Image (tube, rainbow, N blue to C red):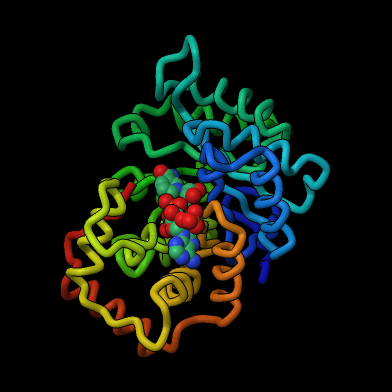
Length: 296
Ligand SMILES: NC(=O)c1ccc[n+]([C@@H]2O[C@H](COP(=O)([O-])OP(=O)(O)OC[C@H]3O[C@@H](n4cnc5c(N)ncnc54)[C@H](OP(=O)(O)O)[C@@H]3O)[C@@H](O)[C@H]2O)c1
């Protein structure tokens, strides 16, 4: 279930699994240190090679770093930043440079496998100092793969900058299809694409509209789409749709539960959806989801 991929503007070859582990949940206070280690270790046993974390995910970077100590070569870790550095204003070159240095310490990995700008806006990108800091860090051997994580105008700008970025991370699922064309084009330019929110945060779990804003948006979309997933369950349908869209390298599943990661891997092993089902999902979104933007 893993493919070796050489990315844009680098000669770096990396083993990308089709399912990646979105490690934000490692910060969940209900998870002990031992639970976090078990989850990461189970991910490796399931064949997951791609791990995604961020500076803003609380204890996630440090817990992931500790859990992967000693198995460095089996994992490709992407972290994200550009903000939250003491003494450096957010979204400056200094915040990126020092963010990379601090991530190296927190993750215990040097060089970093990947560092992505975490959803800054287009104006920040166009100013130049922030992308330049990323390139300088790559040239200095601090990070192997550079990327942008986000949506909308910033994502579109990054997708045209192969000299700066080789990885894009953006939302994609049956309820979030705005990036489909961009992803397909980006992959032709040798970008690696990490699909975030591949389960659309699983809104089908909730009988009534959830309080959390992003899940509530997807809950509304689920009901507006009116798509019947039968005979599949929604989570299997969502993963088999997302992981096999043209250009997707890895679908990042966020979970705190080993059984959910295992079912995601099993779903993707079942292969792409039948073409007619995938086309019906695209058709439903085109008819009823026009104007629904990618969720940051
Ligand atoms: N760059 C960004 O700004 C950004 C934004 C969002 C996400 N991301 C990245 O993308 C990853 C994935 O996104 P996400 O975590 O927001 O969304 P997601 O993977 O679409 O959904 C995660 C949610 O679905 C639940 N879930 C997972 N498997 C399930 C299953 N089989 N049945 C029912 N519920 C299930 C999880 O709960 P359980 O814990 O109970 O499994 C969790 O609440 C993140 O972890 C992160 O790495 C990045």
